[in-house]
Image (tube, rainbow, N blue to C red):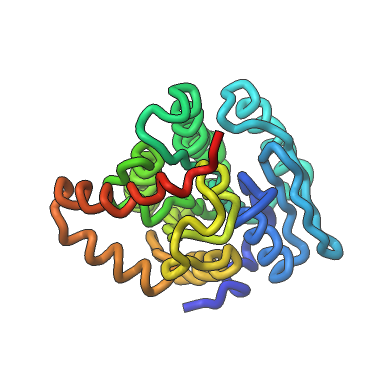
Length: 272
């Protein structure tokens, strides 16, 4: 098995979504340190605040849940690849996403639909548009799913369902891409030290840290899995154990048990 540094030698460019914070930002920082010559293109609302000497970073400001902005962003990404990295393999990291906690459709139907647009539609659209280029030049697609993808998640129902889509679609894509020179990897982190819980409407510290990891650790796990050619990786041994156990439980009882566990967080919601 090659090391992440060796596996990254063939890449000339990285396209990442949601690189302004959390896991996306850590991908840029770690990859930038491993391969300073890489050209990065980030799509997110805010520009990343990253201080790395010689970092080649192009920020495309856009709301990926908005179809028109996503379409314009795709045009800029293709121009970026043509100008800044016309040859070499391309790594696409679909990282942008958010969750919402509450009884459906809280906080609003519009928010729920926005989440589906960002967590699913943007991932599919970006991959579909860039995949022909990746097949010509070689590359990989990392889709950030979640351990929530392995079970029904009452009070986080739509979020968990979007991540289940990302997981199963990524595994199907991996099989379709066999022999094409492109690989697909589903990355499933557990609770991670990011802005996720604040965006979901939960107070800081709402979720126990026993399954949590830093975004830097999650990225290291992802890069090792990419180097090994894996189609799926769950970050953290506790999360691996949990998802393995969940795979043995029927869906309906699992939803009931998850509802009991997740209901307690209603006391930890951010007030209006």
